[in-house]
Length: 152
Image (cartoon, rainbow, N blue to C red):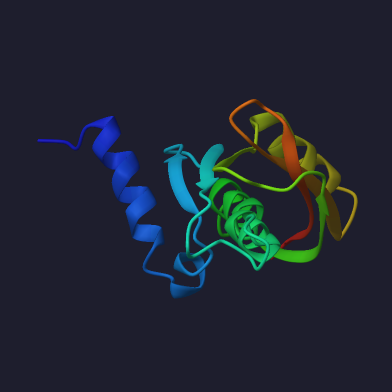
C-alpha cells in the first residue's frame, strides 16, 4: 500500500525540520515536488520571526529560502555534479507585517542549460531569484542566490 501524494509531500516537508538550522528560521515548507522541481514555503509573523520593530526579521526571510536552490539542483542533477552556494543578496522592499510566501522552481529547461554549459566549461555559476510576497501579492523581499556547479 503506497503513501498518497498529500502524505508523501507532508513527509518530505516534515523530514526537513530535523535540521535545527532550518527549524530556527521560523520558515515552514508547504510543498516540495516529488522531483524537487518546485518548493513552496511561508514565513509567518510570529514570536519566533518578529524583530524589534514588530515586522518579520530579515534573517528569517533569508534563512527560510537559503538552502533550496542548492538542494533542488543537487536532487535534480544527481550525484555526478558538485553544487555549492556561492553568493547571496537580499533586497527588502516593504516591511513584512503578515505571513509571506515564496515559490521556488527549477524547470527541466534550466537543467538542460546547465548540462549544455558544462559540455564546454569546467564550471558554471547560475543566478536564481525568489520573491517573498504577502497575501495581496506585494513583494516584501527579493533574494538572489548564485550557485556554483561542476561535474565531478
